[in-house]
Length: 231
Image (cartoon, rainbow, N blue to C red; front, side, top):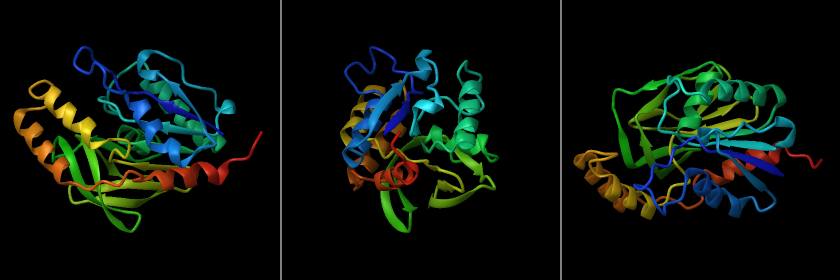
């Protein structure tokens, strides 16, 4: 099984020196639950090409500091790639920006939310369970595609997760994040990435949260295994 992880988050140095990039965090989250998979990172945000569908058994679209409305060199190619995933029934799992761009491509809408930047940990009703999850986003899905149903929500985020009627799922929260990673980001990013108030509030919520290590992992595994057939 060959799974592509799309890297869509820049990694500014020296601010994030020594910290893992998003694609690495995603692999560390999902790999223990999908030992048969080979993970291939596509550094799309760094100019790498998108992978060929015929070489893949699944795709994970990670987070990004960009929004679906931004004009980047890779945004339109990514949209076309996601359309082809639906056409070829290549399973796609989206996280945060991945959740938003999938909804936008597949007939819904994502945009800046009135609640503004939400950072730290929040409680979600996800897959009929109440769970804590780590978040860092200011955009949200505001219109659900006709091909999808809501499988997760939070007080601040009505469309917190989606399942599609083709092989695709997505979540607004970050199941790949770890508490120590966010705590380090809040410390380094204070007055750079976040205001002091955002950093302090985020730190408090992370310290109080109980986020499962396998959050959303079984749902992603079910998606990939459900369509897999050895070549």
